[in-house]
Length: 467
Figure 1 (cartoon, rainbow, N blue to C red):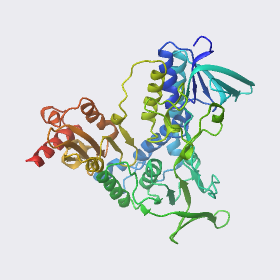
Figure 2: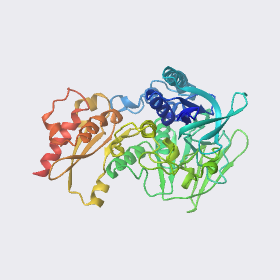
Figure 3: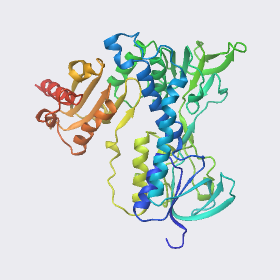
Figure 4: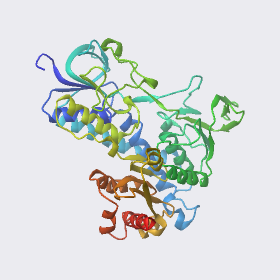
């Protein structure tokens, strides 16, 4: 590697790029990280994960959502909630996370450059400064592509930043609408639909598929749908959008969405969440013999190598599951493999967190997958309303479900919907990682009152089903 200026060049500073760069530096390699945006952190910190999850917390607080089961649906911390009320909480969190990310990279000796990167050849990358400092070409022995993704906007969608938005610019919505149409029933679409519904916005959710979140356990999806409908969300599933157009004059502009079935949905604003495409168009991949698949995504093997062995890709640019947590691990694992550092590759143990209201999290296999694989299984469930902590927290409709093998009782999956789901799932993840059985939860003592007790209740429920 002495013939190259850098041992590792990372393109993109989102979760995957950040962790790939730091892992390379921890291995005492010369690392350069190139980011074309004026701030570090990629979409995760600046537009996506951090802002949207902070917005969610602000909504939960200001709307009094967590207290509705106790004080009634009319209870609110603030009667008239504005977007500014919520952004007051978002902006300092984003600034803090950017500062933390920069400090971590600098502390570990990662060299940073603000530049647009594109390939000159397989080991050379052209960097065009976004700060007006000209152009340079650098060489690197290993390269990690972590450029993330950008919204997939259907042809003819008239994004205008006033009435029609993508998920990347939704925080510029200005004022809260009375009615909102969300196009796309994936993770982002469901998250925003549930957030706005919690603010008493009348939401219509449209998706071409017959069910939302197809990779999530069926029973959990049904529970989410029930909660969304309780919040007056109208579901239009199995419907194709044919046309989106603004109607009305100045001051009274609205949006009409025409469906292929002939239905029309009219609302104050539209949020387009019709998937995302890899942000690869500016990389000049042809120079290294790489091409993208569907939606601009790069194909990799289990070690996150592309077809060019010394070029890796991680994060949203390789597609599903498009989660910050999995992207972080993918970036780290790519850097480990690039420098022959032993690492454990167990993507089947990656937990999934979906920040809808209520939140969803799971790890392991679903009932549908096990049925298709012919695995004999049993389930055990705990309802939050049966757990003291659930009711104390104001969640009387949450649920935790365990799936385990009928014969040897090995835990196969954990699926949760409700308050604290994204934290609670890690207990089950640890047991899955060690191939533990459902009996672990029966023999273990959990603090009282806690949501963790759900594991013991669900285990007893499952064992009782066996007999």
